Amino acid sequence: MQNLRGAKLFAGFGFLMMVVIAALGCAIVALGMVELIESREFPQPRSISYSDLIRLKPNHGWFEVQGGLLDVRNAAWEETVSTRSIKRAFVPLYDARDGREPKAGVLVETKDPEVLAAIVRSVPDGPGAQMTSRPVQGRVPAFGRSRIISGRMLSQHVDLRPKLKPDFIYLAEGEAPSTGSSLGIIGMGTLVVIMTSVITMKLIKEQRTLAQLRGGITSNR
Image (cartoon, rainbow, N blue to C red; front, side, top):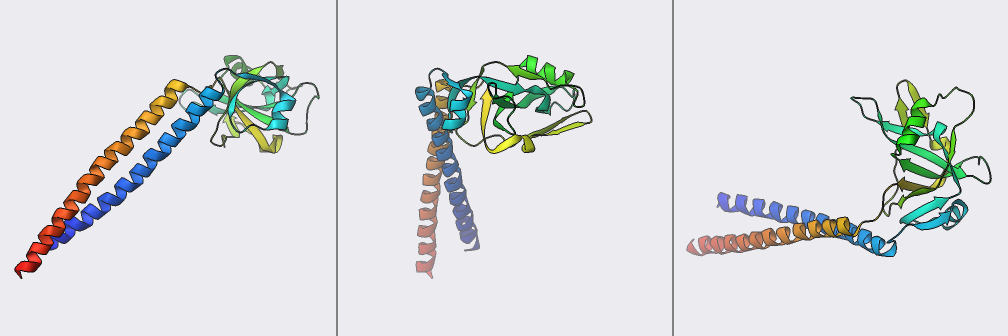
């Protein structure tokens, strides 16, 4: 009888785990669907001015921003610990026409070698600020924005929070929505849901078998 109770508890725990994993699979499918819809909506990057980007504040999409000024000297970055080289940088983007705003409305994540090299050459206490004016092509992620807004190199530390508007737009340069990757994500999520469904059906069958055995033991008494 104790063995039956143990098996029942184990099956119940397994059923709960399958429900959680199935929910995760559904979330993965939903994520893939969002990217698939975005890739159909943005087959090519849309050209947009800095001022229009700030005015429209898109929460997703693939854009080429014109008229922006990258503030390289006030960038933050993420390092490779072993080599202390910069993996990617987070650069405030201002309106090139209006000069320096008090706070930037756009934060650009970039792996552009020229920008990374400029950051290495930049000296925080040196004269002048390094500003780069060029189109920035990238993606506004559909799910939130990066929280990495501070970084370090050697003994220097840069904190971007005082330089950004509270509702700044996050733009990942070089990224684009992909139909292929979205279909892969949907397929992976669907596979997870199918596998958990099969295992759940097996657990339900085992529960029924245990119930029948328990009923047989009770009747024999």
